[in-house]
Image (cartoon, rainbow, N blue to C red; front, side, top):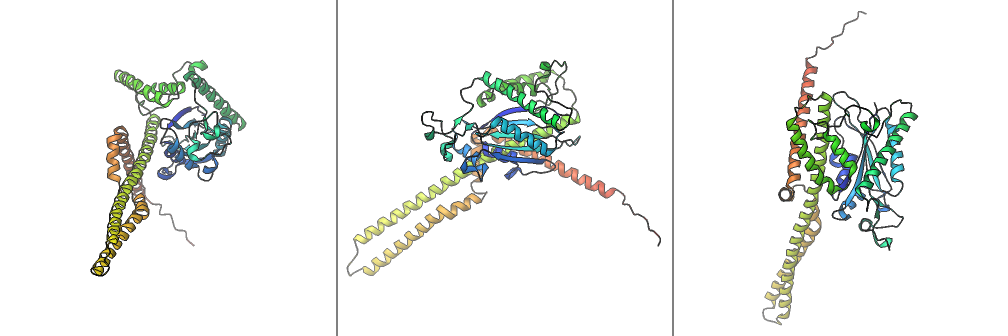
Length: 431
């Protein structure tokens, strides 16, 4: 049965590249187990990112303003009834309809399978830049600068979502949800399926029953939690307001959960919770590793600069000694000792110069490839300056490790059961 889901999220500076890898299942996020990456597509990239779309998101993280957003993401559920090719065409049509030719984008369709009932759970992640391309060629660093209305060629690309009130954003989101529902129903009708979806709430449709909510990490015991979060996200789309709002509602829901006796969960609901926690653990891991690589690169740069500065100081001291020696060059007596002393200084200077060049090129490259270099220092830095993320990452790793151990145990049990099954000996036929 076709179901409806559409939500919009905002990506903060420093998260775009890791999130692009995550939805494309690249790098650390290559597909495992039974999860399927159905399709990936990029579009409207500036010339400098045509051959490497991920470079665009890396530059967004690097050059976007400190408190600016690097991307927006539309997450949509796709109908099981449609084939993979039909779902791909649906996403392509939706992207063309909503983003046109001015927003750089990357989208991917994921098709995980529920382990309980085995059905597909197709959905798409559509991340796009809010910056509107106006035909002016800009370098990566200029592309993400502040827009210059008087002289557009001197500034960056203009953002499409600025100077809007919360009410305007809410209205636009409702209209977006309606357009996607209409498009999804058009595809279902075109390919001969009777099911239809409706973007409206059950109350707005005049249906008197409790809506079935998608469970979140905090909502496993309270079916109304996810609804509150979704209603809030539809009402406001600014990142900071989102962060300020959620803790208050989480606290109030915790109090409600303590007063209410939780209802037993079905197997399908339990699997929903596990799948949600896996997604959250992967996102936390992506955020942590992106921050780790950023700090490790800075650590290598600072260490290398410090060593180069010391070599430069040593070289300058030796040059001063050589210059002083040249001023006091003897004509006859002591000339041999003078030449020997000068030769030793020149040799020492060349060694320092060699060490300087080696550190600047080969040694720095070796450090970048050596994942152990700077690891402990960077881990301590994150523990001190990002304690919440560090704690979330540790819990995510414990969860993923326990999950992997459970999977291995299940595989061992399955192999043991296969061995215990009696083999079919067959029968002989007389010639």
